[in-house]
Image 1: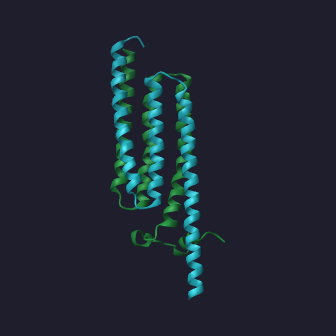
Image 2: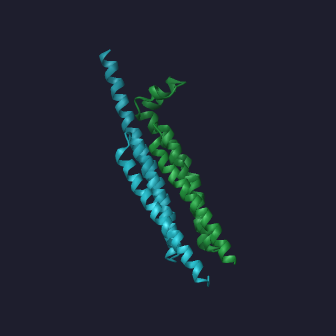
Image 3: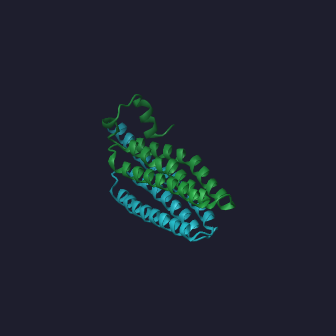
Length: 118
Length: 109
């Protein structure tokens, strides 16, 4: 009976994770501005991998392998904001039509990012 | 894990999950090819790396090999390193273009 409860928990977490993954990948196609697509892609790195690995950890039980999977999730949580920030900086530097898409509050700072700090 | 019905249930669940994540990988490849900006392609490289890590982790359970979690750890670090390196290179390229254009505008005006 306990095995079926464990399977039910693992199945719920895995299906939730698959739903979040599909939403994230679909979001990168549907958004029209580049800065919004970064946000959709970050869904995969945070919630998607948590749910999928959570399902695996519940299925594996309390072993060394599940601890290693938890370490992978924590590492990805620490590094995903850094990746998103750097990709956002690349969008501001490289996208010439940025002023058409969003309201830029501080065009001086944007120009300084584009040229590089002296 | 004695009950064979539970084992076949896990097998079907993770086989279905592997198929869906594989299809999502193909869809990410379309995003890589289509994306109008360079940043779109780097975003989808990051997503492809994360989906691959998920596939490796599911395979550690279905194939019952424990060392694949170490492979997943290394692959996460490699994918993060690739994104950092690619953004640094492309920011340098675009800044060089902007500086050259500013210099030419300063020389012409």
